[in-house]
Length: 149
Image (cartoon, rainbow, N blue to C red; front, side, top):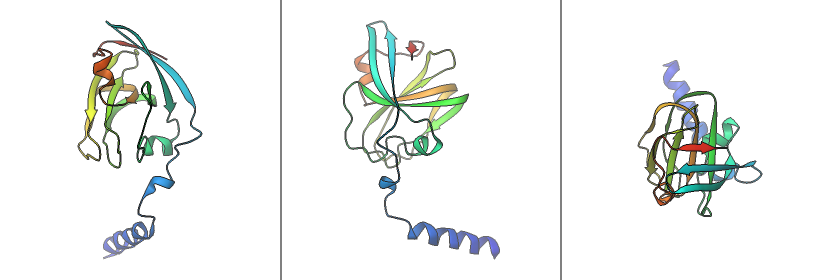
């Protein structure tokens, strides 16, 4: 009974929260950092917002409606770990580039907007980079390619 009551109270608090966490997600004032993907087709520079805090990592690019070409977000993990992402509340289709501790691409996936499907890293990950969907293919990015930060 106590457990049910706690769950009920928790659900009540969630219901009292705003319908959208859009306003709670940091989308301005994040630090920017350059990253260069080194592929068989050349060097491709991106300007990345850094999701350094737990709050910024939880929100990521949720609720964003636009993102410039050559832009994206990086999620650094210290220490590196196995990572799984999803696209809940994410309006933009994104590529997810999982980068290992050796700065090489582990895997690449394309996330569908609003999907709750889990997207696994495929190994120990030092960071995840999210550019617009199609960017990885456009620059010829493949597992094993290097990422310079």
